[in-house]
Length: 351
Ligand code: UDP
Image: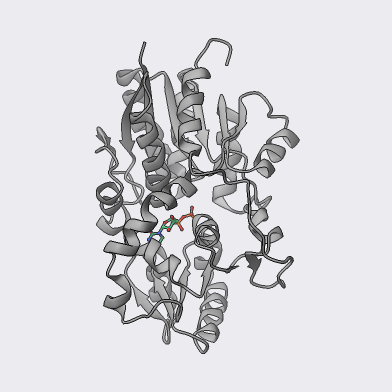
C-alpha cells in the first residue's frame, strides 16, 4: 500500500523545510507526495529559486493567493484548498511552521477528517500578538502528528495538554543546511560578487511584522544594524515586506549593504562566512548556529531558547546568557527521514 502525502507550502522557510522532507519521502518506500503551493510568497527570488536549487518537485496545484489582510488571505486559501483535498483524497496533509498557509491547510484538512502532520510543532514565543503564534497554536491543536524540532517544543505541547502523536524528531532545517553547505561553498559566487571576504562582514535579515509594522520599531532595528556596521560591513538581503515598509515610512537604510533576497546556496555561503548574524527570523537564528556563527536576535523573545541557553544567540536587549556549547536537540541531519517513517507508522487507525 502506498500512502499519499499532500504537502502544503507557501512561504520561503517552508520551501526549505519541505525540500528536506520531500527528499526523504522520495527515498522512503510506501509514500508518494503531491505538493500544493498557496502562492503566499511569489517573487522568483522568494519562491522559484528554492524549487530549482533544492530540487523540490514542482507543485501540482498553484493557488496564487497572496496579499490582503490575514483573514482575507487565510479565507481565500481555505476556499481553494478544500476542493483540492476532495479531489486528491490524501492519507495525510503535511504542513510546516507557522504561516497563514500552515493554518489554512490544517483547518481545511481537519474539517474533512484528513489527518494533519505538523512539521515544526510545539514552538512557542508566548506572544499572542504575533500572527505566527496564533497560526502555530491552532495548527498544533488540529494536528494528529506533532513533529517537534526540540524537547522544549514537546514540553510546550504537554503544557497545553497535547501529548498524543507528539514526537521529537529534530530540525529538518538542519538536514537542509547539511545538504547545501558544501555545495554552496564551492558554487556560490555571492561573496566575490559583493566584494566581501570571509569573516569580515556580518549578515542581517529583518522581516517580522513586529519589526516592520511600526516606524519607531523599524528605525530602532535599522539603527542597531547601522551601529554594528561601524565594526564591519552588514549585508542585508532585504525581504520585500521590509523594503516596502522602509520606503513607505521613510526609513533610510543608509550604511547597510542592502541586496535583494538571495537563493539558499548564496544564503548558506553568506551565513557560513559571516562574523556575526543579526536577525528576527526563526530559521536564520538556528542556521547561524548550524554554521557556528554567533547570532543576535532582533526580538524580545525567541522560540529557539536552546540557542540562547547554549550561548550561540542573545536577544538584542539582553546580555549573553551562557558559554557556547553544542546543541544536541536538532538531531543529526536525518530528521526528515524520521518524519517520513512516522507518516508511515502513524497512519494506523487510532491516530
Ligand atoms: N533565506 C534565504 N534568502 C534570504 C533570506 C533568508 O534563503 O535572502 C532563508 C534563510 O536561510 C532561512 C529561511 O530563508 O532558511 C528563513 O526564512 P524567513 O526568515 O523568511 O522565515 P522564518 O524562518 O522567520 O519563518
